[in-house]
Each structure stands twice: as C-alpha cells, then as structure tokens.
Image (cartoon, rainbow, N blue to C red; front, top):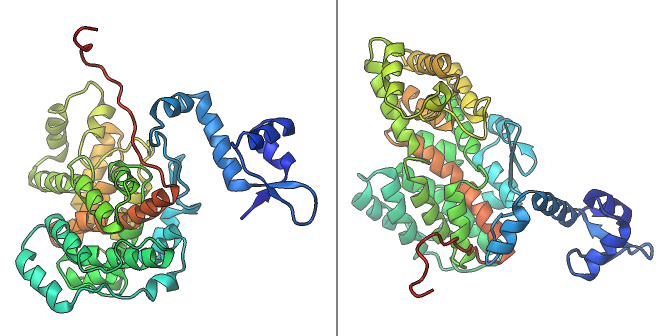
Length: 411
C-alpha cells in the first residue's frame, strides 16, 4: 500500500495542509501514524479517489451524489479504465494482455489473486452424471438459455455458495467461470484453460485458431460499467451470491443492444454475402436507417461504431488481425474484410467488438452462437471482479427517481 506525506497528499488534492487536516477531522480522509516519526501518513488510493470526487464536483458529480446517494450514483471502481481509445485492466493494457495471457491469468489480475490460486481451486461439486443428465435435457437449447438453466441448478449443488470469506469466494468464482463456459458450450466442465475447452467443443484443432479464442475471451473480460456489469453490481449490492449476480448479468447481456448484437452482425454477414454489389447493398441498408448524417448511419449499423472508441475499437482490430494470420483455406475472411472496408469507405465508421466476435465465428466455422459464448464466458470474469468490489463496498445501489408525472391530486 503506497502512502503519502501530508505535503504530498495536499498537493495531490490541490489544497493546503491545513485543509487536509480539516478533511481528517471531519472524517473525509483517514490518516495513520508514521512508525518512524511523529508525522501522519495518507493512503495514496484514498487520496486519489477523493481527488477524482473533487473533479466530479466541478462538473455534475457532486449534485448527483447529493440527490442519489441512497445507494451510489457514480460507482467508483479500480478495475477497468477506458480512456483515449485504450482499454486497461487494473492498469495493464488489455489488448497487450489479449496477445499473450489466458483468461485464467486475466481473472487472477482482475480478482487480485495468483494464477496458481485459480488453478488449484477445487472442481465444482456437480457430478459428471448430474451434469450429463442436465445436458440431455437442455443440450439442444441456445447457449444463453442453457446457461440460464444450468447455473441456478449448479448453485443448488454448491454447499458454500453463500460463504463470503475470501478463499470461499475465489473457489466459487473459479467454479462459476468453468461451469458457465461449459454450459454455454454444452460440454462437461473441466479445469483446463477455457479457450482449450471451447476449442475442443467446437472442433478447433489448429493452435493458432485456438489462440484466437483465447484472445477473444481476454479482450471481452471487462468493459467498465456497461449494462450487464451495472446489473451485476446492483444485484450484488442486495447481498446475493455470485451465481445469482452472474445469472442476472447473462440476462442483461442477451439483449440485442448488448451481447446479443453479435447475432445481428451474423445476419448482416449473411445478407452482405448474397448481395451482388456490396456498395449498393450498403447504400440501401443505410438509407433505411433514421438519421441525417453518414456517421450517424454508420454508428447504427450492427457491428460498427462505439462511442468510447471514436477512432475504432481496439478489440475488433486485434481479432481481425489474428484471423488474418490463421484463417482456413477458402474461408469467408475476404468477404468479412470487404464489408468492413466498404462500411469504412461509406461512413468512416470502424468495426467494433461485436463485428470482431461474429467474424471469429464465421471465419473459423464455429457453432452458431459461438460469438455470444465468447463474449459471455469472457465477460463473466469481469462481472465477478465487479461483484467482489461491490460486496467489499457494502452499500446498496438504490438511486432515486426524478418524478416527471402529474402532480398529486389536491396539491
């Protein structure tokens, strides 16, 4: 834990040392005695968070906090940063991690434990016979539907699912990560790296192609407070267990404006592949969209544009780059890239992660729904990290509504 002197803390906050002492006396900031002198020390993380709150106060954050702090209006997190077109997991470049790390190694970073701790976590207490019986009942279902049934069923078999100790939570988190991937893919869970489990489930034998699955999982591991992650944090704030929170995240992820967008991109690929003239097809398709500017059109085309990445989604760039290195012979890679080029030429808008995931599914010839499976299996690692962070915070997320209806009768 990094600690600051009074002068350093005051400078970081842009205040005088006298004001710093006033903050401590009012309980705004904590200080601890320096064991080697008579001075007081200040936790750098706490000072940094307070500095950010002060910056928010210059905008609308302070007003929002006063109005909405029956719960938390602007959630503070140390997990993921998205800034200047870059994505970072706990200070590490997420795209560089996706070039080399496994999802398990990324989970260790996000959950603040060691990869060895995850590797030695016990298997989930669900027998092979029980899991096989469940798959016989739900094996023909879509990946999401199967997962939404099997996760609650598995939770009922977990004797420590309600245990909130650190070790118990890490065991539950690891079991949950493995069970979810197996449920999505419709196979038996195992302790092997999840990209290998998925490669085996989908018949991917090439090491390079399996590596694309690994990169996709890591690139999807977290993305700050999107709709599904916020849902997970809201559910966690009520005090429920990880299985319940992640099941809620899955339901939120399924919507067509979130993880379900990959299905719409797959449909776009199919339509574009049947078009004789790609640019005429796009002109017709974009002309059906509402809006009055090409950029607005492009941003509404499934798989293109992202408000946090005006210069292009780095996750999509990574996946398309990796596909070009390992696409099988006679794959539809050329048509996928041609569509991206045509949209870029027409609208100036770049592909996003949904496009990249759907491209992985199409180019590698994976099972239908594989793109969603990669998204959900990867994102669950981030959901678990956010659930742990929210549980440690301990507050209920309960904002107030601004009423805009009719005045009460008689008022």
